[in-house]
Image 1 (cartoon, rainbow, N blue to C red):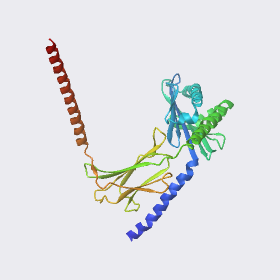
Image 2 (cartoon, rainbow, N blue to C red; image 1 turned 90 degrees about the vertical axis):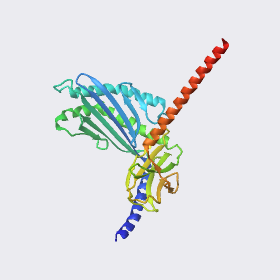
Image 3 (cartoon, helix red, strand yellow; image 1 turned 45 degrees about the vertical axis):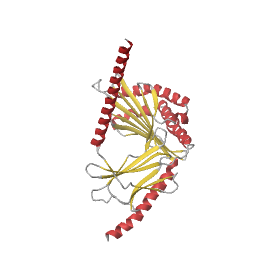
Image 4 (cartoon, rainbow, N blue to C red; image 1 turned 135 degrees about the horizontal axis):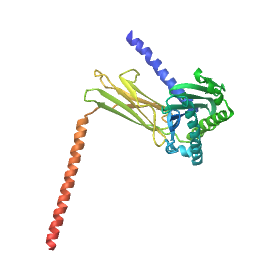
Length: 344
């Protein structure tokens, strides 16, 4: 009965994984941009303003009021946006510092302790699907509690803390309404569109895959499957044994991480139980540039992980190099002395 149950599970799991992978491919036209600003200050002073921009969960840029500068995290982003656009956006953020300063000091003025630090946060989130805006919303958070939020599709601010409802007329004033709409349209949605359109011009790159097999000092077998330098980021790595899916041990993943050249990296590690035979494991990789799933077998001979051996080898190597350098210097000095005595 148990075998029959597992036999039915494998095809179902296979179809599920294929469905997930297909869904990822169809969702490439869907993108999300998140901007988070954090301001810290008291009723009389403004201490810090930081901003972070994420697109599809990858950090794109950051800003802080100390340097008054936008730091780009992905090298090709300036090519997508243009230097003038980034400079303009940087100047706008410098101007917006005054708005954050005013908000923090205005909300903190009723605090009996005028030296107490307060934290105000603005979280802006927008999404597009096939270049069409489908969602956008803003959350306003004060000292860790959400006070207001607005869904652009609804069009009005929702108050979440009755005691601060008195501030709603400020948010709904023409000045703040225009500022909100300008930010969401120009810097959340349009910026994302520029990046997406540029990235679509890039050539796809298949992953470079390596599979390793290590045995820890405790005797635990560790299998690692690493995919490097691939684009776009949609990819699937899975472990199979004898060509079948299953839960074989403790599996961990780095998640899909960006590289400096705008490609991506992913590593999936599998720790096997001590009684596992370690045989016939393969890493199966699916990516749009591979056309069909690629199968990478695990090396038969494992590498023993002995950190103390590596450390000892490094120490001995350094000692040998220093000894050779010392002997060479001593020889040079002796040679120079002999040459001087000969001249005399």
